[in-house]
Image 1 (cartoon, rainbow, N blue to C red):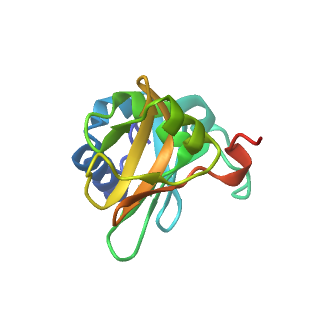
Image 2 (image 1 turned 90 degrees about the vertical axis):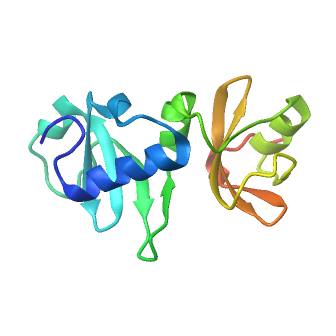
Length: 149
């Protein structure tokens, strides 16, 4: 498998990422992206992808999920690693909003971004994903990765 993945499904996912977030597929050339099971994509280094392991062993991190209805969602890991490169569907939060977001709270959609997944950043640093639902940004950061207290 070449750097970005040879499968049509991987190429389609990269196109969707570029369309939604403005992240060029060239960013992913050094990585191997593969479909671990239907609709579930993982990303790893070329070296790790080449290791012979049992199927139950995971190589890399979960990258994205593609849904049967046509939508997709980047994982929190992917957003925190590659969200620096996004130029679309990004919201930049202030300090108070940052504190709320990293603690798992939803935010008001003062940015008036369209429905779908967005990347939440603070001073250019990707904090994680949110989904726009009506007038709210629903926090998608996993509970285990949130700041407590």
